[in-house]
Length: 430
Ligand SMILES: Nc1ncnc2c1ncn2[C@@H]1O[C@H](COP(=O)(O)OP(=O)(O)O)[C@@H](O)[C@H]1O
Ligand SMILES: [Mg+2]
Ligand SMILES: [Zn+2]
Image: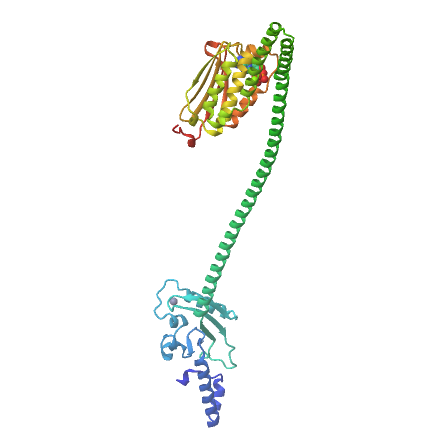
């Protein structure tokens, strides 16, 4: 087998040297050493002649199952590597041909490919050998080194897969962080808005409680003035009358005391009426103790007694439990304002108060047969009170709506307030 591996010596030298046994032995030793070295390499190494056929090959061809060394010799490199290649266009064949051509131009050729037939990744280097001075046609022209780089390819692929995985994980993590960041920003905006709303409602609350205190003070002043102006003066007159009467009795003139005492009694009657009127317009205990329906009936009775010239018809078709607690003050105050307006402005002979509820509405109606809104407003000449405005605002704040219109047949005034009831305010059993 050693004959297949070539020494570097020229033929001339080989012929001359072969005469000396020492030289011959040295050449044989060198050949063996060269073979041992080349066979130990992991790559397939072939020496090719000028037509591209294999002149020498190392034992790697056996390890790669390409055939024994004699079987390989004399064949082209493609034929060696692809023993049964029938592909129309074989990539290896193409690359070898291109490599061989560029070798003719002098330069080395190098390429790498994945070979399906061999199931290996190959790295092929073709290098031209410098011809010796007495070059013959059997001299090798080129050396081909075919390296199996499958492991390298697999490692590269694994690395690229790992890189892709890493990149996609980084992308996912970045996305998640972005989402979290957006959520956080939204939360910050939401909290800031909530804080602002809180601050606003605190301010509103402060304003409201200031207004409440002012309103309370005004109400107290009004009551004090009313007591002083009406009842206070009447009580002074009564005291004077009683003192005069007592003096006349002491002077044994009881007959003269009679008209004076009668006047005092009448004044006392007036003062009692006055006090009843004032008390009626304050918050009655019945509103808290019994409820709005009872308070409405009570107010109608008091009103009828205070204004005997006005006939009041009461049509209260609800019981206390029908009116949600949140509405009881509104219902009572509205009735007060509407009836007082009738007494003050309408010049009516009759007034009808009706309070009724359906599944989702509570309705208060006060209808008089007086002069009507238009007539009274024009004669009142721009003296617009706060009463109606308060009523409207109060209704709107409690989910209600007020409508004013002429009464039946266009006579008088009808005020109607409708409160919308919530689903939790269904009729309770009384
Ligand atoms: N039932 C009514 N009939 C006729 N006019 C009315 C009636 N109710 C209210 N008005 C007119 O509407 C105006 C506004 O009423 P309101 O706001 O309660 O103020 P005030 O009672 O203090 O005058 C009254 O001044 C009056 O001219
Ligand atoms: Mg009024
Ligand atoms: Zn092929």
